[in-house]
Image 1 (cartoon, rainbow, N blue to C red):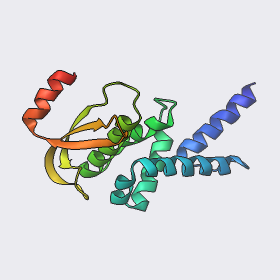
Image 2 (image 1 turned 120 degrees about the horizontal axis):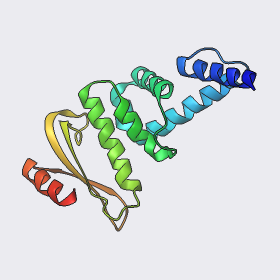
Image 3 (image 1 turned 90 degrees about the horizontal axis):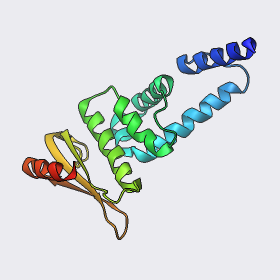
Image 4 (image 1 turned 90 degrees about the vertical axis):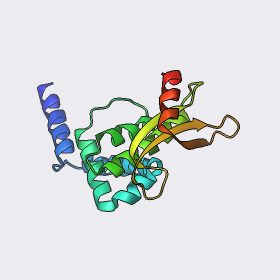
Length: 163
């Protein structure tokens, strides 16, 4: 039994630190990386474009190496990835915004409204420096996410009623 635990610990360490894995385990690591990368690209496509491929892949690798699973649901990966990004504020803002859009789109809650405040206007492509308050809601008819830029006073008023 001790040998089994040692093997699992060695594999876990190799996976986290990017070490060499025996046999097919390396193939599985590459498949997991490609799957997660593809999933995150689908959900955070503007963030990926803004970061560029090299920084994106590096961030995916860091995310997988340091991540402690918070949720077993794939839909939650975008928010977890966005939360751990250590990059420019406009990229972090955009990643959070895209993850929040996904949350609004997939939530089963009756109240689909979400509020957020950003240092950059994430509604523009690319984001520009400007404090921006956003209200996200899902259209009950077609399920589309509707972002709206709102004023600071509207943000405060809505925050009081939502929270």
